Length: 249
Length: 354
Image (tube, one colour):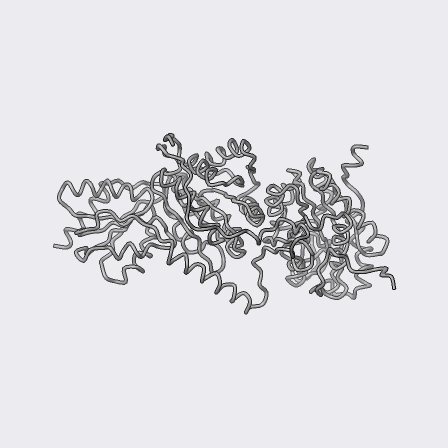
């Protein structure tokens, strides 16, 4: 029997710790497939963050480097500056990248470090048990915004893709979602373009991926996909903000 | 090799390049800024990388990444900046990566002052960041020793796969002295960096640089392994200079700049017929307990001299085990003790013995 589908070589053959219905698994698979298809797996170094993907170093089938909370872009900078011939990526959540790690991501983009960042935005701190993130939506109830996020007290949710797109060094910036097969296909294209940007030596690339957290949102996985479509996408519009190829054309 | 007149901060840079360090990640802070400035001039000439990070926190995390990639790498800062670097330092120690961190110490706490001090002793010798770890800490007291200890620091970092700190002070960083930059050779063979993240090249399983052990029994095992390494360092790496210990009535214990001042005081006291010796720790951790075994039975008192309110004195108390009287003299906040201050304190101790 011919094999028509199998697990990507970009991922190790171990069960992940992610909650049922969480879309981290899909995003891992897309990154793994892209690394395999671009034939860069054996020269890739990934940087795992603090947060739900803290154990990502067990799942990606390439050299991996753990970082402290928010500092993945700085660690990746150190690696890329020493080994410019390698492909270096960070995989970070919204608590990590959009809160404690804002200085590191802004300056990595500003220097146009030749790294690729996969930014998983699920509007909440998952690993620590559902606290408010800088990306939590207005009115969203979390364990640290039990009355709903009040912008008067804690500000409005941060739109990272739009913010980074204002920086000249941010060569490739796109926001995608993984809530439907069509969106997953688009997400994979974006991730591929982001790694291609690095391979072509065109500087810093980031893909913001809207993702679900059924456990901490307190709804079942199918409803979580709907919640993402109905609540997150209107505030975080999908689309490409920067692409070096299109700017050249 | 001919001697060259250099400023301390620049000598640190020159010695690091001699030691094969081509990567520097830093952030400006007085009184060490001549060092990143020097590296920004010199490293591009040899195909190295100088990068001014957005913060001390980012700089040490860049060092973490570069060290994981298997190269000799360093950062430098001064006291408040070193406080910020503790996050990265503990990860580097936990993940067992080699690197060199230079602290050109200034007065504290808080923003403190920009003048020389030795008040980061606790921070340097007790780990500094979270968790059970130690740094190998070298404290030079002149620039020739500084350039030699820098080379030794890179070497020992690779031998033990551990972060090493060179603790100068604002005086060492800013003064000028002639130095000879001869590359040192070391006997110990260096282990292969087969753990580095370089890309598998299809030849091996993925390497993982990590300090996370979610299972308590695994983390304890890792910590026991680290402690065995630190024990080895304690047994093998103590360095010190003992000076005029024979027949000394009083022995001064001082390191770095303060040890130089103490030597002047000892010479002045000798002219007056007093017998005073000096123990000068060169490693602050491991603390050179060996040095104290050479102290004469005649010696009744230690005088600990520091540019702080008294920090190393705790280690002298540990080593002393209650045998001799211990006194303290020091200035802080960027004030430098004079030989006279130390001489007066010695006289006071000798008067008290009668």
